[in-house]
Every structure is written in structure tokens, then in C-alpha cells.
Length: 123
Figure (cartoon, rainbow, N blue to C red):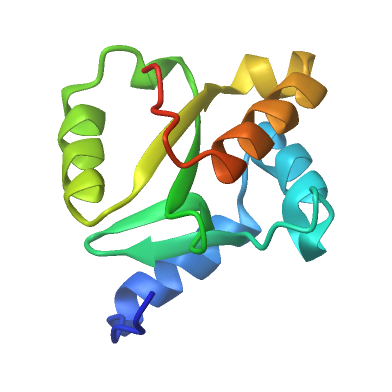
């Protein structure tokens, strides 16, 4: 992925989001950081276009979003996903509860999506 300059305000916001992550984001990050999950490289709270993605695997062009109930049927999320898809990314979304209740299944799903770029997100 070619490097694109990021506005300092967006970079500062991403840093703040890394410091103030939700419990579900923190738990998942413990599995993803340092190539712990199947040696796959992820970055956290990474600016992509005008958005900040929760987790990004640049190699697989995959974005992982961890959502609370406020995201249910969100028009904003649909528009965001469409823009990220236009940039060549797939967006895989999990509910906070999924991460907190069955982290192993979430990690298995992420591995499957990284390894098979033909898989498309279900929501």
C-alpha cells in the first residue's frame, strides 16, 4: 500500500483512539499484535482515506472493525464500507460481544479471510 500523507489532526485522533480502545478492541489487539495471529501483520487505528480503521492487514487489503450496538444498521457504516471497498479493501465487522464471548472463533474467521481473498464479508 503506497504511503500517503496523513493530516496531523487525523494522526493525533488515531493515537487517541489507540489509547482509549474498547475492551473488545484491546482483547483482539492482544491476539493480533506482533504477528501473533498466524504470523499476519496488522496495524491498529490506522488512517485509511478519510477514515480510521480499527485494524488493517495491508497485505490482504482487509480491514477489521469492532462494533458496538450503535452500529446496527448504520447508514454511515454502509457509506464508509463502500468508500473503503472502492479503495480496494474488504471490511470485516464483528460485534463487541462476539470478540468478548468467542475470541477464538473471531480469530479463526480473520485468518480465513486473510488467507482467502475471495471471501467477502457477510455484513
